[in-house]
Length: 264
Image (cartoon, rainbow, N blue to C red; front, side):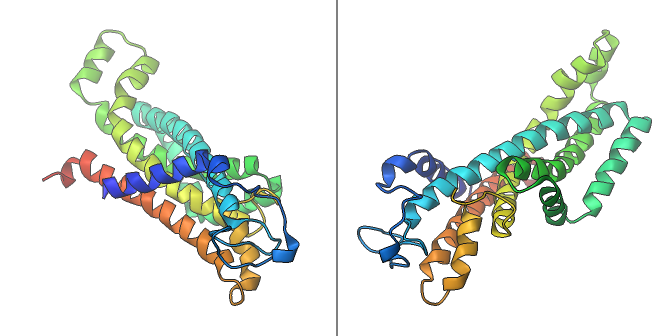
């Protein structure tokens, strides 16, 4: 399962990076006379409603999805590790305050909160990353908090405290490394969630704005041609499904390897 997920993710990353070299067409170049043309040798995935090459747009959309996923995971994991380690290590009122904030944010459906934030801030790629990060850090914080509550009782942590090590040093050098494997698994699964959320926001017109291609906007544009040109929605839908499936396979496989309860 890990191997299958890794292959899907690596192929997608390589295709996104090498997109300008793989497709001879510009993702924004229009051929209105050939609009809605079916897949052919010249255009393997066909043309969209404005005569643009779907393969070129899929490759550029892959870069958008991967960049958003990577940015959201980076920001969310950094903030979540910071607050989670502080809450778990210090405990007391600090833990209560951070835990209540986490509970409040988790009480709202994540995608609805993201829609509300982007609607207020305005549709753009930066605001999408910001909105998804605001709701994404709580999962990392809960995970790291649990690890910190357990790790602060370890003998090497108590020895570091007895030797006069500062709280910041103990958290950075001793607490956070114990949570690293679990954070990696969470980040892998978080990539899949961020990609789906970005596609959903773009589908609703709150994400990447035209003419920049996004898998979500491509699905939205293809809704009007489900019967006369189904390739407009089939290929973006398959791209989202395969990439999300690849990250889920990778995350599940890594979790089986790092979780002692799953190891036989």
